Figure 1 (cartoon, rainbow, N blue to C red):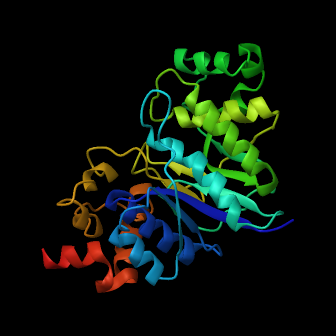
Figure 2: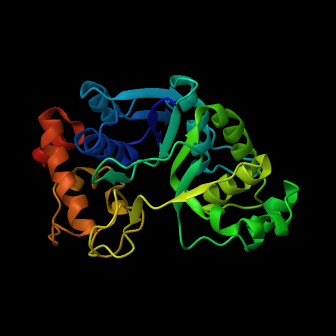
Length: 285
């Protein structure tokens, strides 16, 4: 068996850029992995944060955008494209660990050596949009119900390279089958793609989300995708807001989910130093 290769799906903008920098810092200081960032829509000039990542030693590779669907533009579809292109940089016996950029590590997880994904308790395939997509893909509700819990999954996905290309293409097709898309429907599309290909998914629990930000730390990874009035990644989206992400104004217990996120943000600020674009702008302000 080959190695686990962490692949981060990203877009070429500063909001995703600061998250990728935090991910990189966390990954190389808490684990033995060197992540690969697959950045979509990089036909234009690179966002300065990706230059900072390259200077720091990160592997950054460009990929085309996959956001177009038959009905609209859907950014999460790029995740399937990242799986497809990530396989190009791996050996045949490797396993891809596909991540979102808004994740950090506490320690190096023991990822499985077969197709797996983390359990997301709030997913439910019994929704009109998911049922409609399944019908278009000729997947019966009985087939979904039989494996329902194992399909309630998301990042980090662990995908053997030998399965990656077929699964990525099926995932792209499944996204397009939705009549209209919610942000999380890319997760349902992954489950439908695996089901259509007859691939069993093993559930893992290496990650915790920030539903309760002051909850104690219990997992190997944090996915800070939720947010609340106390702290939310979405508060650092626009150009004038971006520099302040590196100078957290919130103080919470160090041994909590949010406390760990903020602590690693401050460490990452020092790691990238004054050469980092968004850090430099914050200092100037």
